[in-house]
Length: 303
Image (cartoon, rainbow, N blue to C red; front, side, top):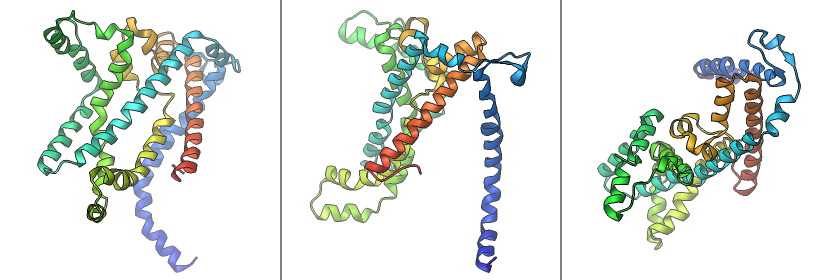
């Protein structure tokens, strides 16, 4: 072995030592439990265990694929994720661009700090705030509507037409500041001489935005977009579970709440594993397809 190679290995040993705990944790908690997916092909019994349960093949997959409730849940999952993609994904980008235009540094830091705060609130707290604000009796929003327009209070949380919008807006309020941190880092790292040269050439702020800022942000945007697309068939359980109620199940029930209901409440472990496995496979295929499309269109991808 060459001396240079030995020296390079010795230099990288501390890095591998730092990486080792994360790799071990990933292996223990993400890869070893994967053997449990075989219960999707069994009539799993807690008393018989994974190895002793009866093998039924694709029975559970055929069952939920022919279940109307599952397709309603799948539709809701995709629609809510599409709203999140259109509004929730673009909101941090727009927010970062707007904040970057502020000239007063102290005010800019204040805005950033305030925008981060909701991220540290749990969804239990956020859902309580949202329900309280939209309450038809004590809610601030309804009181403003009555005062300004003299209309009857609206029960927003039980209106199917309003629930998805409330869900997405609550997520944007909670996460827009925190999600914009990566974009702030990219904007700060842009060479300021590029803006000075553009200004000397007569470019206004809008043209600088489209020809300097956004192109530099594009690698980060593509990376986060691919990660978001890979999760199109999944959605946070807490957000939906804490805000939904029986009146809006038809538009709010998603895969995660469906799995909770039939898995934990009805103890159909094989069925929920089959649904989860299908969800994971679809997410993986979507990630591969979107990564290939991104590399062909903009020349960027995860791998």
